[in-house]
Length: 265
Ligand SMILES: C[S@@+](CC[C@H](N)C(=O)[O-])C[C@H]1O[C@@H](n2cnc3c(N)ncnc32)[C@H](O)[C@@H]1O
Image (cartoon, rainbow, N blue to C red; front, side, top):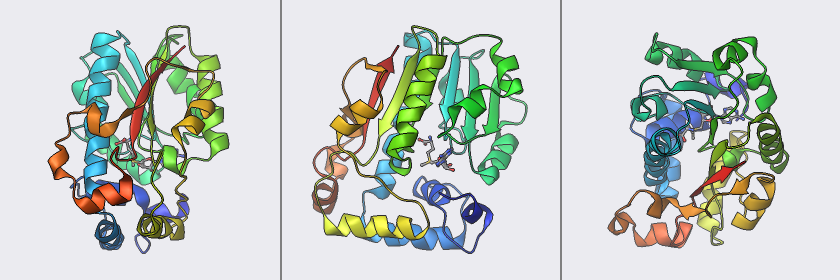
């Protein structure tokens, strides 16, 4: 998603369309129209967005309560609305959110107000070094490098080089015992010309959607080690599969195309 198109309300924006799928109100008419075009072709789109957000809540409790991290660093966070990580993580957890969309960052500061230990920075996920080396972030972390990273809901819009760089840089930066929660979007999709039409809507907006196989994702994420293999988001959060229409199944396959995994150092 190029930054120029984000504040411009004459063109649809993928981030704001996502907000519309989730039933949010941070979107413009132009986004709603483009989103409705996608939904017509791909009725699964809003369900897919919901699945991604539900999974984030599981990740928040898994990383903090089960795995014991007290620092979460989240890339491409989107709006920190009340279904996001800080609402689920126990009080006292340090959460560093980030997004490259200045409008998201501004709304995020409004939403968070002075919520303690929760921060939101403008940063491109493709360059994790910029976020991690910010003096404010270094001050917040105070040398803590055993962290839970989250890269969720964005991989389809990142190039291979970007994913590989994020994986290598965060791995090198992190202390042993750190974790990366990763969402593989658009993975192992069955070929479908109608689905490809929806991708053209995004491509026209400058947001190239990358389709990959899970095998390709596993390679790009090295040297992180898979703690357990990818799980379909349908299975991740007990999705009621009766919600899937025949058209959904034909477009996205029985596994819904979205997967998540925890990787460890
Ligand atoms: C689909 S939302 C995902 C939000 C959240 N992570 C989730 O899973 O619900 C995508 C967000 O990623 C942001 N984004 C897209 N590409 C990005 C990049 N390269 N760096 C930082 N943010 C990015 C967009 O601005 C948007 O707010």
